[in-house]
Length: 65
Image 1 (cartoon, rainbow, N blue to C red):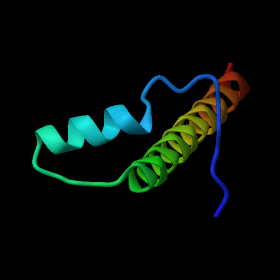
Image 2: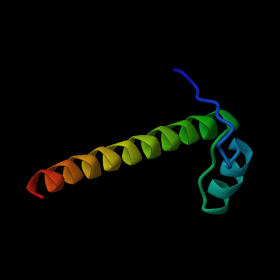
Image 3: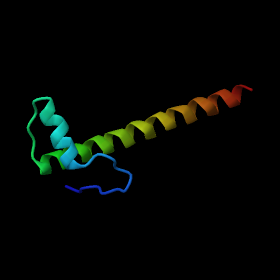
Image 4: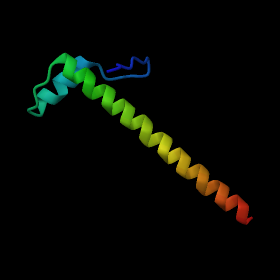
């Protein structure tokens, strides 16, 4: 498994552990890192998908003008 390290991350694994514990979920720092990696990958994928969708819609709209 590849772990992504980025300077754009604002939530540390320690903060994720703390936040999840406040809601009754106990995880280790390693598990929190895996969860954060997944969330950032999923977020990036969602943004890329939305941008591609908007690009297609824009191209279709400009063809009709």
